[in-house]
Image (tube, rainbow, N blue to C red; front, side):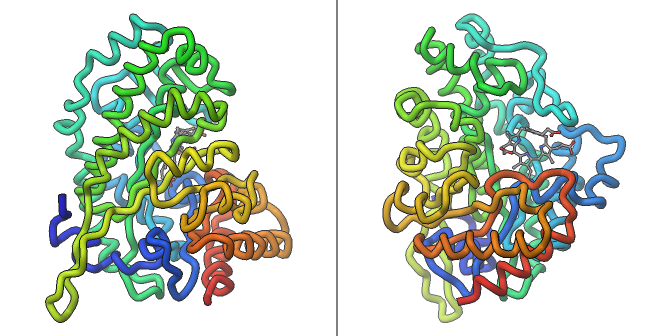
Length: 381
Ligand code: CP3
């Protein structure tokens, strides 16, 4: 499927942005940078806007979700917006009883840890998500309309990244009924009842894939799959019980490509919409996470990027991986760490600077702006 000519990629607004070029494996005028959780509690303008609105209600209010997505782009001059939403939004949209508790995370009305609970859950038709996704498509549309007019000095519009939670990370919350440290319920179910596990994973893969596809069709220029908790798994379990479902989810966006027509009226060959795969503590899994069929691998702060480059194999652009803890360190310490990440990244064909996980809520936002400036200056070829 070729994206419509109005899509920011096809229209040539974002196809040569620093971000999309890096995701294609090219180095641009400088290293692109964005931060996981750049939208959120580190910004006073976010905290002001969110007063009196619950998290999931904010995600489903297109004007609010769009405004929150844009706040860090305006403030920090980052090279991408990440769509303000949550990994549990598709579950909420198909009618699953879930809320997000401040300081805790997603909490469900019940856990789905055995075959009968999984059967009840998977009786919900994932196709219902497409009918319920109006607020998502609308929020993306409002966001890209404003992003089309931005330019952080790169000479292109700022791309929007769409995202979804990977099947395992969603299943980790669903089986447990809420956040957990070791994701024991999920790890037990995959062995105790492989049939029920597979049913749960295939169902979440359908939701994840549809959620990603909706965002890309509505105007996102890249998609990131968050398998935040996959680091709890052995490589063998990841490959046998998780990777096939993640690949299935990504199949929903793999057929999406864009064609840019240049000023002379020549249409360039179609290119796929770039896909990124990220997890925490996934040092052992980096090769397998590339193998599920992605263009870019996001790396947490535990593995130096030069080591990650070896693990994912040649030719793979990397994203990451400053330890978020360093955002609270004195500037000279932070500056040295940023430069070290850039140096390590020379081992990869291209690099998108990011943190090794999300921005801590207590982060001073002026520090983030300063990091963006440093990356743009130090990352210039
Ligand atoms: O700026 C961005 O990164 C975009 C928005 C985004 C949110 N959640 C908003 C959010 C993204 C990409 C996510 C993904 C997400 N949600 C993940 C994967 C990424 C990761 O961090 O590993 C996970 C595991 C979740 C589940 C979840 N939702 C958690 C663990 C929490 C934090 C709970 C807390 O209060 O500390 C949430 C809530 C959430 N999602 C917030 C935001 C801005 C905080 C809500 C608030 O402001 O109260």
